[in-house]
Length: 337
Image (cartoon, rainbow, N blue to C red; front, side, top):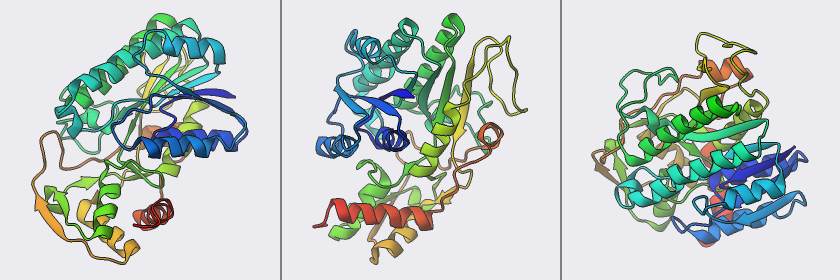
């Protein structure tokens, strides 16, 4: 298989690229190396991938006219994993234009490139933030996503809708998947686990939003990648060629399109996550309890019924295993921490 992976220098894109390369596949990695967080960490991820002869790196921006299409024409991939995006819930309050550029214009350019150069499966990353103000738990893919709480969430919902329209108009087999709080080695510096680790090791207090009572459906990176790879072998069929796999299926009745949650379905309180981190670090955190900031929700909880029906496996690594693995990586990457 030859895969085009956008966001290959990102946390998830790097992990997925590494998995596919280790399995002997070829990967063309597309990344802008944006400065939303430490660019050197992103370059280190690409250097890690460069150990594989099947890896080709392209540094370009999604929103640049023709950039994705030119890469598609040259690489001729069998499958596209679109993971690149402007991430972050709170940053969307500071720099909304970045979300319009990467998450709206960027998705449009991906769809046009796939239209010009068809692939057997387009896989599009979305987010659990799409559920927004939904109060029904667990979050089911069949729930209406009409109450986004941030521009980030709204931009990802828009990307899902745009992808569905292209799947309908041009018969592009498309799976959009919603992630739930992904963590693990090579993680993102703007996310809680990374921030907490740095501050605890340096003796700084950590800000605990939701006063520790907020719950998140933490998903270990290796479990997430395993689910993505397994799902890649299940492109949605055309309406005339197949039907739903279960009552939980979101298969469109007018397009080869499906929406799938990827999460473990086991929410954990933030204060319990901090306790597991303290145990792994061998240090206690100085905590400053704060209310939830605008755009955050008190609880995320994935329904895994559809994921299980499609691949027979859901993320299962517990925090007690995943957090020590992250700490081990962190201490090796930052030996002076």
